[in-house]
Image (tube, rainbow, N blue to C red; front, side):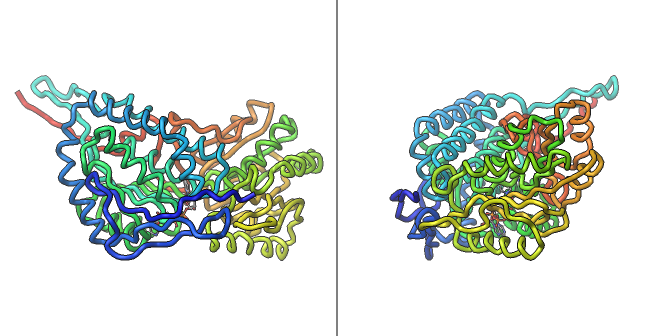
Length: 474
Ligand code: NAD
């Protein structure tokens, strides 16, 4: 376990088509697979953000007027280069996050798909002609916001960045991105590749550093006209205040505590395997993790047996990666005590794994009630809780008794029931008899504290542009 990947070194900003050295200090990361040193990243400042915004501003008019076909070719060119460098990008992602290689590859492939999908939609941002009056010609047209700030977390670093950057570019915007300071490598690599395939300098800029120093400076900058944020509720709320003061649009993709609802007529074997995937994928560090497993009481004991068997197949260091940082590693462990105090029954795990690095055993708690902290709070570790229910009405009530509303899953062979339940769960995405098969085509976003606005799908392009109406009297 804990295979070391040598990536020690210093990572610099990418501004105006160039690597720009840190003006001050560096932030030292820890390798989550070993607990040893990881890469150091430039600790950016407001001055670096000003430089990046300046470069973006110089590039904005040219990019906005860029021929659409040519813009599409650049998007496809970047996708092709990322595909060609798939191994390199996946190694970087693994080095930063420790995730198993199949997961790293899946993430790179998903990121490539954003550039291909949105690159194929370059002609979409057009308008309509409106029949308002016989002596008026009225039309609408789409115009980019200008400079879009993209702030992303550490769990799926390249994917989250590409998810916002690709549609924003196609809508004619230029970018100032700030990846998580813990996992900055792939976002810088992507921006560098964009320059190599011919994107004009300044169209994609990446400033590294902390949220306080760099993230806030991006959101507060008077020339940044839209922000796409993916991360925690607390930071989303703080950014929301700044955006409200500045009256700029914001997309918030925040956390989740999603329900996996298993009815007694479900294919229990598939539901058990997928439910375990739901809270162990990426070591549970996924916003859409299915961390609450709601099981109908008539099959409760049988289903617990299947869950236990499935969770035993998840092995730290093999198909289960580490927790990202020492602080997060400690935080996940605090929930073991909370679970015990609340009276949950530990069926598996509930402890760290042997060896170096920040590995936690896949953990399963049964006999959980939905008011326990482990059922309400986003743990962001490989921890699932099982909650029994009696009726369809109970299941809906429990699923919705959460501050979050990102996804929900329903397992039942009764399609009428599945659709009824899907209709009443307050979440942005519902899956029936399958867990979380996301595609670039499917809009993604939350209800309640999980955020607002939508990423992905055709729809997302329109979240990166103004709609202007022009009326001509003749
Ligand atoms: P985080 O909110 O701590 O950080 C996210 C980003 O915001 C980082 O780049 C960080 O440096 C920056 N940031 C921090 N403080 C800031 C500030 N004051 N102003 C501006 N930027 C600031 O989140 P995290 O710990 O990196 O990621 C985990 C969280 O992200 C979880 O809650 C998870 O559910 C959520 N997430 C949501 C989605 C989604 O699509 N809904 C996807 C992945 C992760």
